[in-house]
Image (tube, rainbow, N blue to C red; front, top):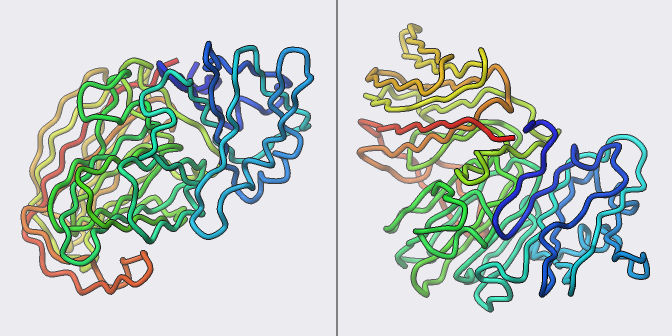
Length: 371
């Protein structure tokens, strides 16, 4: 059952707070021959609990407190400190009583692609600020939702693609070990601004250009239709080979995703989406216009395919069960403008007002989460 399952990949595994609540011991299955690494990100309210969580070897002669690694990020950049282990037989030992709060633990095998690669960096998501030249691969881990902003410095060209996975599944566009979907693949001078509902993402850059990448905590489940972006279900990972499992976090609080234009400008919108649900669980799309009218479509059957076009300035996407399915929405305006005033969140970035956008195209794909 996805509500009780860690998220597994070929070379890595993600553990969340619900894997640990009331559980004393969990095996680190990705510590195979050659060892592994463990990276942990904890919300502020879960940080104290990490003092009572340890990684131990088989005879308990080695004990590593997760607090040292959850709190050991660089206080300026948010770069993570990893626990690097040799050999096998390691477990997570949990001495907490009751719920521990939002936490994301990334356990990756030493055989994974890009392991120990000099062009790779890992960051704690809601504490990240990487103002200088970003490495070729940047992995971000956090149990909290946030906004991600990526921009090329000056007139440099920005070329990057993003997956909701660790670096082990994003070292190249295709293929990747677990058949994970690309969230966004963008080339040009426009910045990337995404709302992230995933516990882990990896940004892969093409080219050696000066690039800023930073994050901002944001519990509002929303994004703008002014420029290229995405909307996802909370806890989204999007990998076929793990049957589209979903990460869980008590920091995910809304089953409704709001897409809207910053200036309330109506647009011609093309919709093309598929939905696969469990039982009678539903996903509902509502398109609002400035006149107050709206059009609504609701999917409650397996492998539902729908195409639609409408005029509106806002789209709501709502689920009846947050862990019953996994969806990804990609949208790209036919005519793009600048980032709206106040949307630039990287240091020293000066945003401008958005120009009118005449038309937006949305492509929505959705698949069931696995067990």
